[in-house]
Amino acid sequence: MPQPGPGRAGERGVSVDPGTLLETRDLSVHFAARGGGRGGSQRGIVRAVDRVSVRVPRGKTFGLVGESGSGKSTFGRAIVRLLRPKSGAILLDGEDIAQLEGRRLRAIRGRLQMVFQDPAASLDPTLSVGASIAEPLELGHWRSTAERRTRVGELLEQVGLRPSDRSRYPHEFSGGQRQRVGIARAIALHPELVVADEAVSALDVSIRAQILALLRDLQARLGLTLLFVSHDLAVIRQISHEVAVMYLGRIMELGPAGKLFERPLHPYTVALMSAIPVPDPDIEAGRRRIILVGDIPSPGVAIAGCPFASRCWLRTQLGDPERCTAEEPELVAFEPGHAVACHFAGTPAAQG
Image 1 (tube, rainbow, N blue to C red):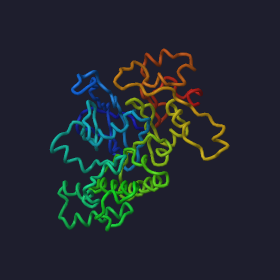
Image 2: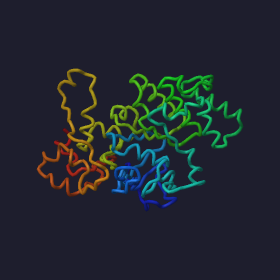
Image 3: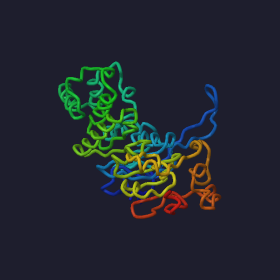
Image 4: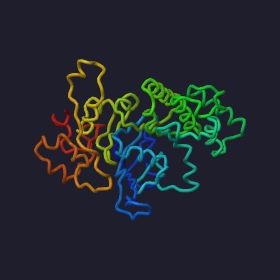
């Protein structure tokens, strides 16, 4: 079950389940909130990621889903160390990489790579795609120039492009083709973990399906572990083995995809699932859609109780709204392999 394991957060060399490639323990990423104007003084702390503990199974896809502003992209960037965590541990094969710097951080860069949301923005428009893909090989001192050129051709073929495309520039490709280039760049150094941050959200539906199929194929052929970040539960359902639902920097629910989609336990998950269209007009016309009222509260404001309480459609139905605003629910196992952070998880009302 994807729950915090034994050992002290931040401890190096902690023994972990051999089936787990990556584990976070009480991981937090905070930013300083500034006042208005240039050079404004600090006005508090934004808790973008707040004490998140998950396990990512080796060779599987771990889906992370939530609305915009939930902290999921920040979590992904912290995993590949584009951001430095405030506290907690990031265990890669049992080694805590959360606070690594300099040479030690560069040494693990090839093991963790990222595919970004906007393929156009993630590629240098002044470089040919061949040069962009070769760049991590050069930085990693990967063999000779001729061998790097051969490797670039192989990578282009692996993602469904032609080796001759290496001389073209990003503006000469479609959005889907540019994302294929981004994926080729990400797998250039044989990484163990790839974080895909909204990797298909900017693409047309038909192209989206092709990119998802490509990621599944690469995972099977290369043994990749994927952390797939998305706001779209339908996409998460297609590609994920394990799923975590994130809200305001915290995990609300997590477990195997089959269990979570068959029986969602948290009212936030239920609301998100109610927005997934059903490809049957009769069912679609008669099913209930749960509309969440209001925006996600500011992550810079401390919340004593449940972070979802202000928007929860369930809180007032069960006759104990004070508990939700005063007592923060812990993420605990409701059933084997399925954890949830809700005082009323599993009640008939919670399941809509």
